Length: 421
Image 1: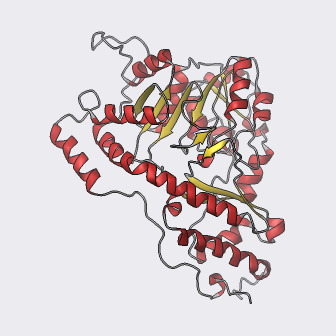
Image 2: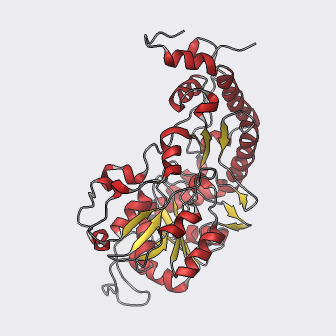
Image 3: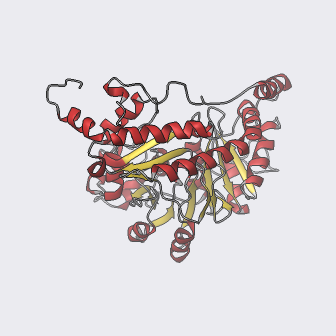
């Protein structure tokens, strides 16, 4: 017997809230008060940021970590440290937060969009290879939702063409590719600690690298162009004050003590959801193979096939939300369709135009990205994965309930009068 959907007047699957985010307590309070009372509020004088840099680098199997004000700045600093300049091209995916591409503009270079894989949501190495020109200098693979990219293939492509690889791991704290934690596989890796991230201090970012030369450049750029051991007012290269503050460092050190257990919970619950939702016709959780030895699960991403489910994504989301399951469509516009790129509204950053007058993002097309953005993509927030197994069971039941009522949903959507059945 089919159970009536909540959106049609039935009882919702879930009325209790999912875990909230961020999670914090007395530990964060003690650390913050300690930093406050120390009087050493900046990175140059305090110990909180330095301690966090050491801990984060060691965990991610990196020699060096440079903590900065946010993930966007971290991306830009990595590009500058790699020597990216006007006229250079950097290959990026179009299905990501705008900073992945806007940081390239702010490095005075040109983002070139390569399509993603429909199954993984990540950069398609074949599209990367096809996008390479004599001007290409770097690739930014994004570990979307926390799923590691095909780093082996991307790294081989980069080696053949002498390109820098900058991992955008802003979704992927603690994720593993073939047993290696992401962020230190490429030449550099970038993480964000913005409010929604799996490890957060409200704002913040970090760059990892195993390259001593790049680490020295990153340190100088984030510290006003200074060099260790030289005079305070000597400035050897372009830079600024991008240093992370001690209050954020204190929060990060406290949050770090919680991180591993949370990561294990997300991995366990994410696997459960993927297994059970994949049994529903037309639902395709983000595909992971054996190369992904741990998913970061900043998001639980999935695709839906409207032809199989017989209703649109918008109708499905409305029905799921009525059942008490928070879910969103995610990135609904490919980056190259954003007004900033279509209008080349890049302000003073004119270096991208050095690639030639033919630059016109309105001619860009990445079919897989467009399919996921406009029709198929669905996200569940990482906080939903922090609860007990019962929470996951409720999510699965809600999806099953919506699927069983798909015909009724289709009828309602087709009702021109707007009446609710």
